[in-house]
Length: 96
Image (cartoon, rainbow, N blue to C red; front, side):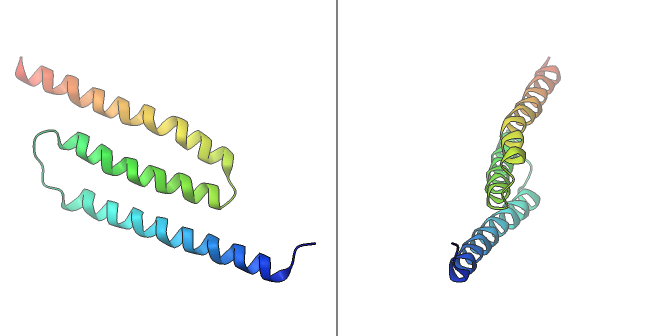
């Protein structure tokens, strides 16, 4: 039988994980906005977005949404690769 104190402790842990991940997302989002444009900045921004992706996956797992977390885990690297690939070939066009 589940004790009420165990339920409260689990909710406290979930709240702490959500707060930590949310702060990580906010800090990474601010970093995306203040980053100055330069050479290979798309890759740096993709790295920052990867940090946000991991935080979102942790949040989905804490909220007991493992299927959404799995889908997010599978689709995000494909999207990042497509963005990086598009930027790489766009830079090749500009140099030729």
